[in-house]
Length: 141
Image 1 (cartoon, rainbow, N blue to C red):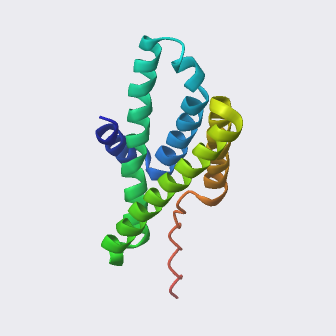
Image 2 (spheres, rainbow, N blue to C red):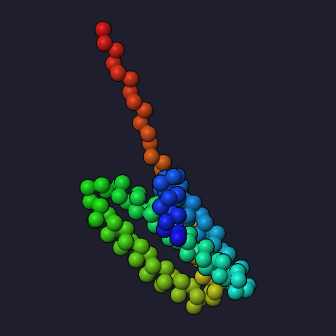
Image 3 (cartoon, rainbow, N blue to C red):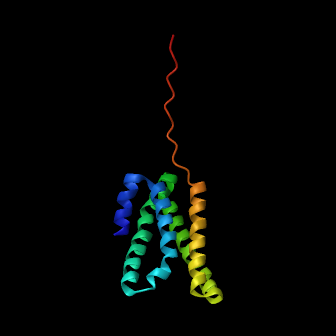
């Protein structure tokens, strides 16, 4: 569901808006993990929305990658997948270390903090596409 919605929203609003919006929502939802632990209904709603948000970003990332390397789409998408899997490995190691050292609260704080760093990095480095204005034709005499 998130992937389908993400594709449609990427078409409507562009990949930059979807990536930044998705990262912002992910940071908020990571910070809300303690609320999800309060009761099963809250956990079910949180889990559904978390899954939708996670999959909603994927079409925008793929769109951005394809437009960045139109001559090497398969290589670009392969590198994107590799980067995502590397991120999963690093997240597992960092989460395990935070859990062992600081407990569950440490994992939530670390996750939200790293998500915020990723959001800020994306805001600083992912500039909107520039639309070049057509230059006026030289006046002929």
